[in-house]
Image (tube, rainbow, N blue to C red; front, top):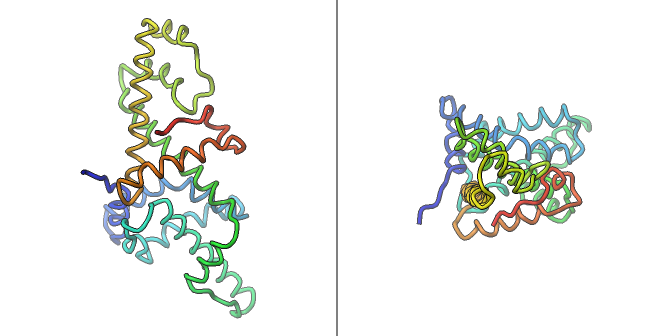
Length: 245
């Protein structure tokens, strides 16, 4: 079966130094993943200014060290790859800062040792990263749906949009049907098709960030779980939690 490799292909392009495709690929990576990476850095106690600088430095680090080129799309999810690379990057930054403060006397851990220490310690920032990642997935899907309604259908989408995840308030079917000048059964049919299209695009987005088709459902379930965490600020931004499956 066909399986998209959009984001992994983007990695390969972004690792080509000095070419237009590389710059465009980096811009695409920044646009898609800046928010969750920046949020994770902030959750580690950095100031807003520091987080902005570190996020930018991280993307440059990926290019300069050919980290993107070495990425193997057969070894895990794209989300996990980026978070792992960021965690190691922040660890290296911390080691360098400590070395400067101690006159070069800092103890450096190997990547394997650092990963072991991080795996054994609770990291609430990881959950926050996953929630922001889920939001990016939803925003990308919503942007695609909106593009499909560009032009004459934009006023119609403005009404139908309120029946998708993230709406501040969902009107009654009666009110929405009256605004569009259609019957309630016709409106319900439109809303059903829109929701199906939206879920399909979410699934498509998820498919481009995993290593194999069987991982799609696992990732969908994981994102659904973090979206349903009503105790978080993230959940309050998306009421009610969307159904991804």
